[in-house]
Length: 490
Image (cartoon, rainbow, N blue to C red; front, side, top):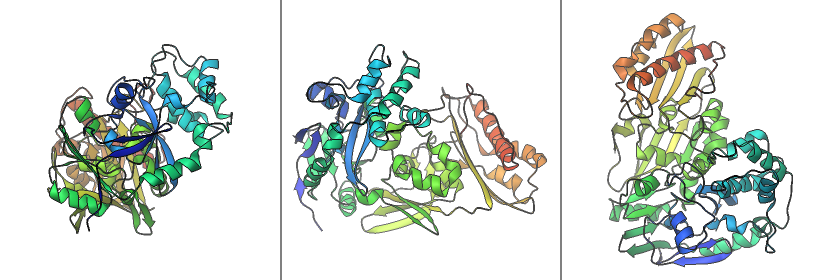
């Protein structure tokens, strides 16, 4: 069934409606704000979604109503903003110029020095302020994971966040105008496909998942963009063309999360933040691991399906999902197929995805409580860093012997990959330190990792061996201490 086609992107910027009919597929929100709108409070620091200086809020209508989330404007494309509300630092102060409680607390607690990172920090704390009036230290630190500051040392910023969280304000524009904004955004959702062609290429915003399938069948070479946490860097760092591009973050159908006795199904468009409660509830040992995927802004933007479809060997989600025997569903046109996630990854940069086909869902079986499972992320910086090594272990023990085992690693090969030789050395063997020490030597048969700026090949092999030993020790009830300033585990 054909859908109506609209030739403009429409969204709300602070209080103003925006309609754009001549917008390049790779035009970032940051450049739009600073260059076109002269809203220069939003800063450019890293241009890769790492420092948080460009943080803004984006409101969207979903299954839970109107939701505001922090995002990195430097890697968010304007084409992805249809029917959204973009909120910048300039929108926080009251109409009479009085500072917002978060801003005032930053002033009172001396939370800013050079001031460059301050607008992004304020926006992250503002998002937290909207969610709670009693922010805990842990919640504040989590909210600030995606914001880097080299001046203040964070102590004064955390003090400001604590002070602001206790201050309510009925005059806040987002709080007072929530009902009206929901109505405005609902009016913008007219059920039309957005299709804009410029000298830099064509972009699409599909109206439905069926419309997405039609677009991709007609444009099989198109770049599919969900959260743009990786594709954004293709533009800002590699200067690659992404046209034609299809923005899918508006598709509520792809964000669905369903739970049954058989397991958990995540729509491919569900963000890390969307999936957090379901993942943490069904697989509790994943909670700490999930909270270390990027910073809050990255988790709000990035999607589980995108992380899988991109096929990066250092993607965080594939190793634990493989260890949990996850499956992935792909769609092309009206047809679908499902395969084990481990079979989806073929070689570096190559996945089992045909032209015009897209990842539509990820299925994770219900966890057997009799099994032992853990996932570990090793990175130079504990928060908001890319993995050097990511490992996941899932073992079933019967009468003290290994009845079944699955071990998967990222950062060790051209793709996320199981450690089949290590598994073979453990299967049907006693779950003992002697067995573990012998199996550790088999990692060299499974992996020949590369040396790069994140870690050397020797270090990666050593880490993989030690993670197996750590997993064994934890299954024995031992607490493994991780030094604060070493490369941190989960």
